Amino acid sequence: MSPRVGARTRSGHRLSAAAATILILASLATAAPAAADRHQCAPAGVDSATVLPANLSRAGVAGADDDTDTTATVVPLSSIDVNALGLGTPGC
Image (cartoon, rainbow, N blue to C red; front, side, top):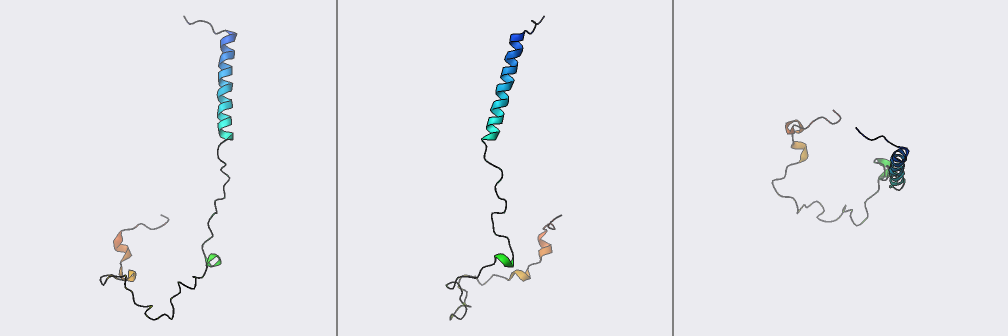
């Protein structure tokens, strides 16, 4: 037979439950806030567009069209068949 649960045992369980509840609530209250701004980056589009700095603009510079970093075997992206890549349709 199990012993009967007395008033002292019940109050001990209540005290343990109350202490656990207080600890859980205190840990939630001291957690980092989840109210951070989700829109921290500038929105894409014409409104957020900026011009290049003058030192990066190479228009009118002699030899600006000479590409010394691209190898001879490079093909333009327009020649790639996207359907042959087997990619899924976005949003599906």
